[in-house]
Image 1 (cartoon, rainbow, N blue to C red):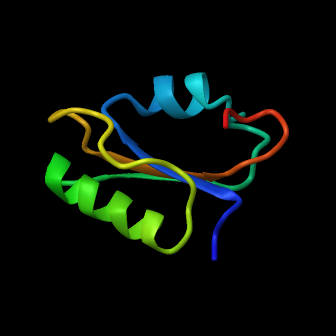
Image 2 (cartoon, rainbow, N blue to C red; image 1 turned 180 degrees about the vertical axis):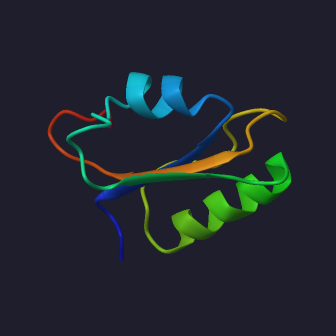
Image 3 (cartoon, rainbow, N blue to C red; image 1 turned 90 degrees about the vertical axis):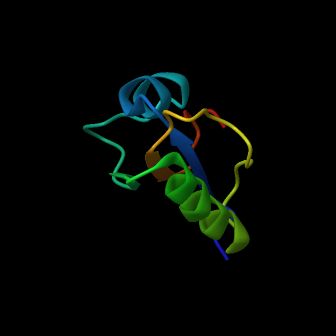
Length: 79
């Protein structure tokens, strides 16, 4: 349903979303992130996004990864 979207979890949204993935915070219109109360809740939210067709992979992050993010991939994002 959402194959052009990528979802993940992180403890540092600025590094991950705007750094590693290459999202342009000011010009890319389709991205979002939200903090979760725990890494377990973040992992559950990530699993739900992956189950509806978002690209990504479960099992990343660590116990500090409490931020869930998603973005619509485009020509300059990684992936």
